[in-house]
Length: 269
Image (tube, rainbow, N blue to C red; front, side, top):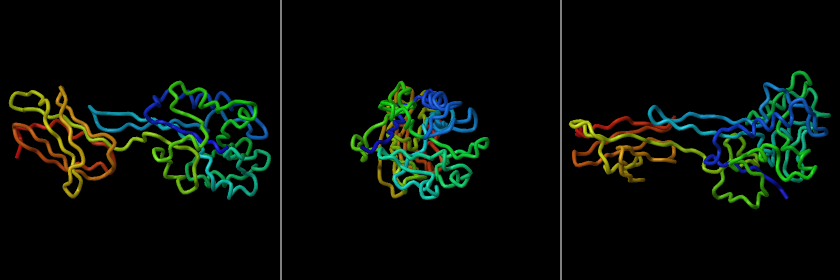
């Protein structure tokens, strides 16, 4: 049965247990015929990437566990001159006995998940802990170490592919690492009455697309705050309605999430 990794952004808290477990399993320890030892520094066969989003005072941090995506049509297999192969369970393995000197494999991976061991003159990457699976383990070490179940190792048939996504870099190659709840953009702000310097509770805020169609509507909370979550990168129109009047803004989220600041409704026009 073909296996795959499923990673949930909503569950990952950035503890890096998966990253540490990978190091613990592979550094200073060869697991032949699948891998020579991973160097202590410089290699991240499991790499938790951290991204800070938004602007003060509304800042969010997301974490993305990133590893070889074990592609069905892996470009490293095509470039490997017989030194890279795929197992029946879907794991892509660089044969350490055949890959010596094949530095070009590093550039063959569009995700940058293959590293070059200068000491051994050997390209290396995640093996999915094939040695453990062959020894009876049901999951790789990184999955076993995940306390929040943000990282799972499942039969592909168990994954709802209508909700899961893959990374753009490897999407064309049939990757077997899927993500749930991948962060989109957000727009946030605060609405207040500048005359009395008090927040406005329950003010209506609408989000419109470039053609003026209302996409979503929210009310400010008890602190005057509002937020639109999981929206696509685009230019939007933001309209705020209150008893003091109406204010409209254009908000560009194509490059990053946006905090639009404190909106004084006494400045309506």
